[in-house]
Image (cartoon, rainbow, N blue to C red; front, side, top):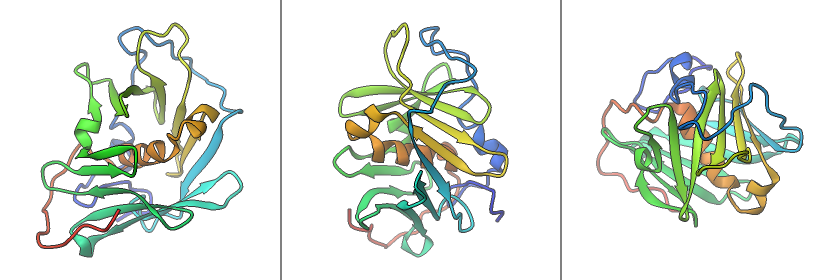
Amino acid sequence: MSANTHMNPYCAWSNTQVRHAVPVATSVHGALPFAADTCTSNMVSFQFTAFNPTILNCTVLASNMTAHYRITTDFSMAGYTTLKNQDGRNIALIEWRRDKPLVEIRNMVVKQFVAHWLKLADDSIHHTMKVKGQKYIWVTPQPNTTRLYPAGNHTTPDLLAQITCAEDGVVSLDLAPSVITSGLQDTCIVATFLLQCGFTSIEGILIEGRAAPEM
């Protein structure tokens, strides 16, 4: 398994395939103006690094290079991925299943199918995400760049988050200050992980008889 390959435990996608899990789009129903370059200088940056050997086991660093999250996938536990914050507390749990993986984010997203939470739209060019009644849109305006906007007919929508994938496999996430203050930081970390590990294609086996880690 290559160190630069992002995949779920039961899915053999190449890095290039995973990066295009969210198809490239120029707009969402014509409602969002997507510029080729968007300034992220006022955003808070995180970097998914220390892949062991993939993003399934990695560390998320803040801009000051301190570890803010640890992502761990334990194949002995029926294919569960846990995300812990810098205090060592579980903030999210993904259960990899043969047909549809499940996700749960503490205090933000109740346990549900990942494909339902990060739903691919009918036009197949963007994913919608719902958190506590509020809808958001993840869209890829250009290769290796995915952006989060609030859903709705906004003339000039606010850029909430931006995921970028470098050629060397490094994944970066930039968050607007409003995302931090509104409590969406953990949610965006989880969404970034899922969008990068190829959750949309699950082909494998579900190991029975193991209890899920505690949230």
